[in-house]
Length: 360
Image 1 (spheres, rainbow, N blue to C red):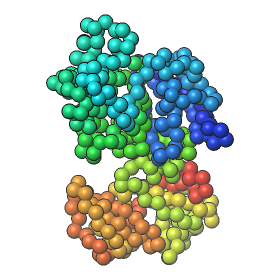
Image 2 (image 1 turned 90 degrees about the horizontal axis):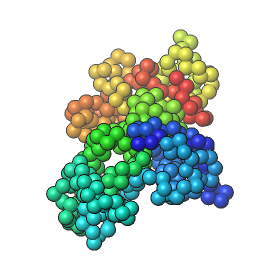
Image 3 (image 1 turned 30 degrees about the horizontal axis):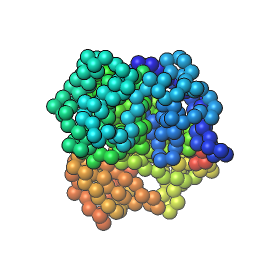
Image 4 (image 1 turned 30 degrees about the vertical axis):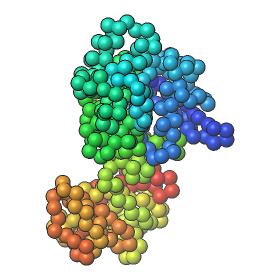
């Protein structure tokens, strides 16, 4: 397996720049997930690594060698697409071995490679079937097997689970994770699903507007998001945000004026100047509700209750803003109730009102 280095890469279609000076180093054997909203440039970056898109500027190197001018077939990369792209008239075994046969690989090696991949992917009993006789998950595993038998320098996944239903996506996520652990393969995985990013990645690359917003482990991005964009994109239920202007409380400590008579205590040493606009975020599971907030919180009306089985999402009106709280287990609260709610200062994430960059 090989390392992949992306140095000052940008991509433009005429006057429209879709990727802006991307710098990223991927270690050999690492599982990297590119995540972001539609149109952020993640699939374009993956296609440039594969050689399916030209590089407008900068350099891409695989195993230390620049590949900007190499055609896709000479980069020794395997790509798994959202579409399975299987040949309908071929069996599972023939689909998986097609690239090896094109290379005139000896038959004994082809048979061994196909058998090994089929065993790893749970396809050993299905190798004689054609794609129409397979489920969606089985077809995706065949597409993955086709990539595995090539023994490439790296695997590229372009939203491979998007066509599957929720239960099958969860199952295939686990299969991809186990496969990576057994192969130790360098892998780059593109998705807009932050749950996939959190569960699969060694490191996540969060992208927006053609730029990298943050690179780090899943917990890095979850616990210390570098910007309001990352904070809002990573995590489910999504982070709550409230905005206001920094003022001084009666004791001189900083508070955030939310309007409507509501003020929120801020952590000491925030560095935000008095009068500046601030955006404050807090994870729903860190919002204090009910007995946990009694005596320190404000009475807030409940607008909506969403039971999820493992917990309950409670939507409340915190003065002029809506706040979600996640509580473990089943809650007896219902719409129309009033409940104490508090946003503890030590759990707040502070972002500049103009740039959205993290302040604490």
